[in-house]
Image 1 (cartoon, each protein chain N blue to C red):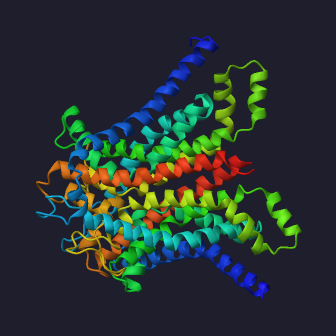
Image 2: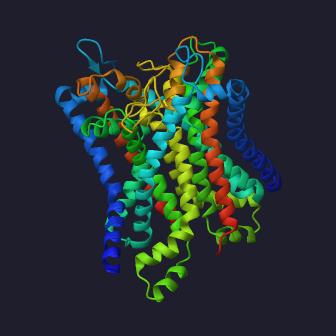
Image 3: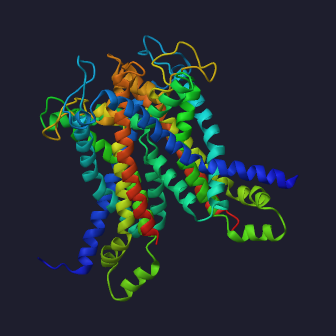
Length: 284
Length: 288
């Protein structure tokens, strides 16, 4: 084997690693570019704010947008309080014992359960057993459980980054543990918790498999009226129009994909930028 | 009064804390219940080793071997593509890229993770599928190969970000020691950093694999959904996840077919549980 000069082999390897990074980055950029280029022409005020026309071939995605929004708002208002409380328990109260280890294992496992299995679970428990039917609330509960491990993990990171000395000072002044958490730890951890929540919202807005049998409908002739309504949802709508409807005009599909993509990416971007900002400007 | 409030709040917090366990047990219990009801009517050996998935014929056949092989083909393909690329870019991002570039790349990888799988599936359908068809001169571009490529991109963010964490948590003293002995930066990265971060990198790979096995929508849209055992990666396949997603809508709730899909869900749950458990063990090891 030829022995390369260490300097040369370093150069070659750096080039190789750089190329690998490009191979990860470029295709995704191309995907986004293709959708923006082909979808931009379909986006009009009417496309966004009217009911589907011509058996969906004429565009109109208002009910799908509103359906996704209502599912996501319900899901996050269930998952956020529970997730933050669980994170407070793990970070502030839990001792290093068997129970804590089991909780952590459960969180890791919840994070790994395939989304379609959440769909099955939601169908079995919420739709059938609790008789909520295929509805916004059944889909939201399913998504809430699915998003719980992510919220717990990010909230825990935020709580953990609040310096320990803050708590010691507060406790040494005779303030109770919960008051310390309420007035000292939580306010300081809030930016981190919120950015985590926004990332979660972005992620569940794009999920299809969990709402497939719990909330989503092929077509609903009216806008969502209550949490017990079956609704159209943006990701499911995209799935339907790109696979199930023959003769679907391509630009309508691209337009729908663009709306979904922008919804998800803009929220993620806001969260990422906010996090960078808070990291730079934090008080400690 | 204060005491009572504190006491109640702390109890509520504790309840939320153990809720994760409750949910895991509920999900597993529910899948077990429906799965066992299915195995009462259908032999478990025929279920796992049967080659034919004909849920609507008479008598119905529920052999998931072809679905397992389908999931395996797609997962192995995606892993082969995603692991080298993912680990190499994690090395680049954490050790070589200048700080400004690193922050941008990390944010980009995080954005990648947020792209919905239906969007990936749709783009794959309109771009990659026709390309694969003409390039390899196949009757259809909806193949395990096309699925693997698209899934590799979905596993990439997980692999990159978790490997990157592992690489960055290698203690400074290791690196300084290597450099002080006259190693070049690359020798240090290859012989010291990579070795020290290995458990974390393997964990990242496992978690990436877990994501690919559980991926549903993109796979359903790209792999062709033919329930047969493929000979090569250039044939259509059908995965376990796609079967559940595609057929649940048409089943009679509570019927044999419905329960068969829950039994597939049980198999998926067990596989991902094992994968994640191993990854978690490795991550714990890499933190020490």
